[in-house]
Amino acid sequence: MDIIEIEKILDLHHEWLESDGISGVRANLSGAYLSGANLQHADLSGADLNGADLSGAILRGADLSFVDLSGADLSGADLSGAIICDADLSFVDLSGANLSGANLSGAALGSAQRGAIK
Image 1 (cartoon, one colour):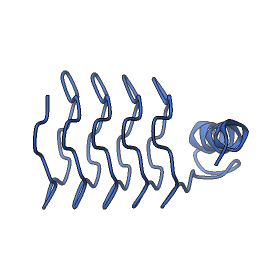
Image 2 (tube, rainbow, N blue to C red; image 1 turned 180 degrees about the vertical axis):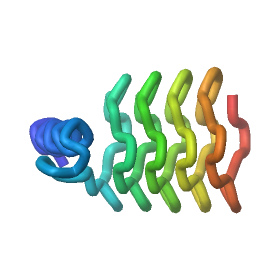
Image 3 (spheres, rainbow, N blue to C red; image 1 turned 60 degrees about the vertical axis):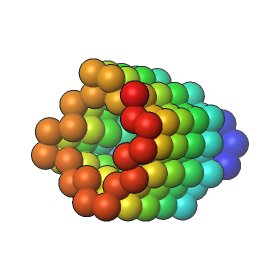
C-alpha cells in the first residue's frame, strides 16, 4: 500500500468521522502492511486495523480510540501520547513499543505481548 492509497483512505475516514457515518468510508486497514509508516497525529478512531503490520510505525499523538488492533504488530512503534481508549489490543505485539504518555483507558489488552515496552 503506497502513501497515496493511505492518504485517500485517511481522507475518506476523516469525512466518515465528520459526517457521523453519513458520507465517507470507515478506514479498513485490516492486514495492511504499514511498517514504518508516519501516522503521527492521525485520527484513526473507529478504524479497523485488525492484523495490520505497524511495526516501527510513528503513531505519536494519534487517535486510536475504539480501533480494532487485534492481532496487529506494533513492535517498535512510537505510540507516545497516543489516545488508545477502548481499543482492542488483544493478541497485539507491543514489544519495544513506546507507550509513554499514551492513554489506554478501557483498552482490552488480553494476551497482548508486552515485552520491553518503554
